[in-house]
Length: 344
Image (tube, rainbow, N blue to C red):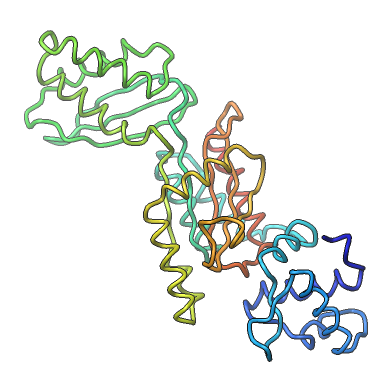
């Protein structure tokens, strides 16, 4: 499509979309003229805008209004004309502070990362947590206060996850040690799904041979992991940020449709899964994907990697289509780099 535009048309189109991304409002010829280095009349600019409309890159929401970019126009702008800015030093420092893995569990690291990303971008943020596809290295039950125990899971990648389970009151420490030994003796360079399946089968076969209390501890400890196996856990934060952009009731209805979709999460997880198979930043705009069709929203997402440089998850933001792409794209990209560094 760019080949159909001469230099003047490209510049007018770029300035118009850039103005739209800053204001979210229709842009008129006078606004474009004020931003241009060249001295062009408003009439000339209106003629070019009309040509861009015929090409399907712009549209006018009302007869007397200025122009807005179509989803196809936004895609052309992002792919061919967008000038990516550098990340501001304050934003960089904030992300580095919150993505520092020292003293944090993986869930805490992910929560703090997307909360910071949401605040800085003023968008909703989301992360697809890593699946436990790495072989297990160690699992341990640690006594806490009466009736509770901590389950510590360590993968061969060095990822550590902690979860709390309920155990019968008066459970002796010896039973927790026995349950720990039972599981660790059966870890033979297997992934979590493989380990769970094998141990569950053995528990059924040896129910009478294993102490009832130890059996309950092992079964409960395994049960808290089994819910996250089919896909990585999805965490979404900052949805209220999207509401700040809403002024019209029609826009609120469209956003409510998106919120309903985010609640079910299944389609979003599939979309993020597909993003994990691609390299680099992925940008989904409006009608280009059924999830965001008619919502007036876009999603910017980037994958992150483990210490073996395998893509294990994705992080990104959801915001209005008039996002400041030049600022937010490097922000999402840098956050994914920091997460990759933390997991390494």
